[in-house]
Amino acid sequence: MAPIRLDGSRFPCHYSRRDDRGDVQLGRILGPDGKMPLLRVDGPHSAPTEHYINYDTVMVVGAGIGMTPCASVLTAQLKYRWSKGLPPDKLHFYWIVQHGEIDAFKWFIQLMVDLEYEHLRQRTRGNKKDWDTRYIEINLYVTR
Image (cartoon, rainbow, N blue to C red):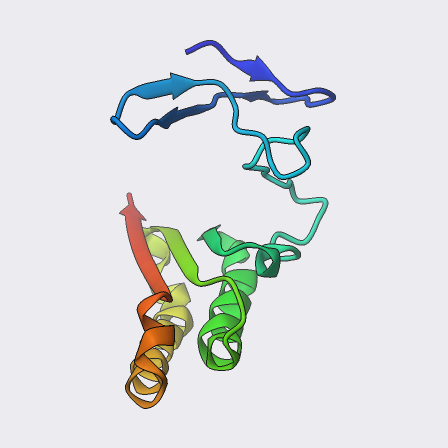
């Protein structure tokens, strides 16, 4: 797949998606404005969690020192925003951690356990219809 350069971008971007039949389609999907791609990646010059509340489905990827903003997003979403019916409705979380650093992130592991308990508690108390449309997917990748 050849890289596609976005206007003004310093980084090559590769876009592919699967259509309704499952065939790979090359090219970019434009956002609501018809100009910018639907998927945008902001660098370290901006707050990575600045605009997540504007979307219905969010993918949060964290590693190293970036776990602090991830913890903030997960806490805000699971403890407060979903209890008030606020977006995003679907949260895909990816945590990449080196095996030797796991001890440094015990606080985050405990936070995930607490948030999962809170999420389960809210689901059993709340309106079933609302909770059927909301979910969080947690993916953990441990590297060497």
